[in-house]
Image (tube, rainbow, N blue to C red):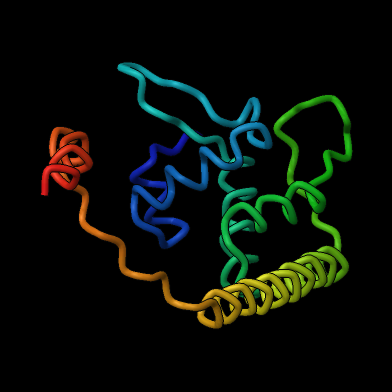
Length: 154
């Protein structure tokens, strides 16, 4: 059976734009399960729907974004026949992949905290500089040219 975007959105509990975004993110993972129907309608097979459902489940359970959830599903999904058929999706335990993603997230946060501290240090250094002295306002070039001549006539 093939599901349209609207049907898929209802099944997985997302809006149509959210469903489109996830399908676009997982397009390479859904190769063979994502088709174009009449008039360019996007159609998803049962296997594709199961993969998308798993990605949405991972997003909700672990608080991941759609790209990270797609990465987890990519690691989890295995085709036991290996022949590219629309076989049932088998899923391994995702706790290792989630732990790895959480480690990456912690490393990114630490990097951003260090970068934030460095930038605030630069701001403090700028505040410590002396204020620029007031310059004479710019005058037209003709006035600057004639000033020495007018001063000698004085």
